[in-house]
Amino acid sequence: MERNGVFISYSKKDAKWLDYLRVHLSYLEREYKFTIWEDSKIEVGAEWRKEIHKALSSTKVAILLVSANFISSDFINNEELPALLSAAEDEGAYIFPIIVSYCMFHDISALSKFQTINRPSEPLTIMNEGQRDALFTKVTKEIKRVLSLDTSIVNSADREHLLTTKELRLSFIRVEIMTIFHSNGSVSDVGLSIKDVCDKSIFKKRKEVVSIIHDLEALKFLDKTKVNKVGYYSLTKLGHKFIKEHHYNV
Image (cartoon, rainbow, N blue to C red; front, side):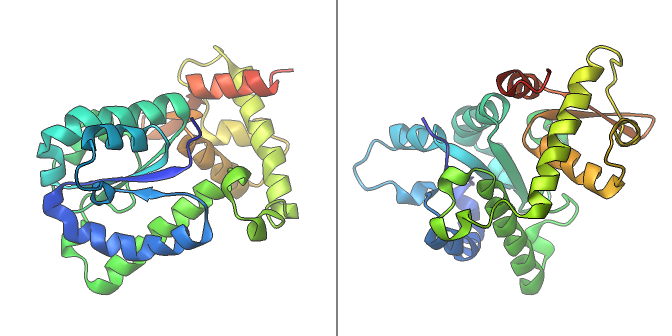
């Protein structure tokens, strides 16, 4: 099944934050051919569990409204989260946690490995209206960026603009960096630092290399570990699979 949907996972006790977010995301629904799904879309009398799992199976981007209520929800932890985390690990779906309130986010390893939209020390509950709108605008832009990577779901008006000169250059850098990580193989168990990649790359602009590495990490092609406060990156199973399928190892 094609993954082109956006799924919002939240506790019903945090419904007001969902409402604020939906106002911002409505722009994407008008411009792009995909569905933003949350459980209010289940019609009365429908098999809600079946409907939720159907939506989860087509999720490209998952937004998690993380709070103490979210963490304490048995349904979220037993039904929604396992499916979303599996989609991220196996299918390259994106996970965007938004911290709604102070909670034990950092103590939950399955969640804390994902980069949050806002810092856990700066939850929505302490933001003013302007800060909240800025954050939700950031989320909207991130979702648009992710979905624009897949030209099959970009509307026809945008499709002709995808391959600008800059984007074409970044595509070459992305291929080269993926090849560098593949060639590194088992040479280094810890992986490669950004400096290592810059030294090995023919593209010497650190800013471009950093941007590509972060994009590859967001795509779940790279894993990051820290050793003595230095970040090291290595290919994930999904990254190796992508290289093999696209013959980047030749």
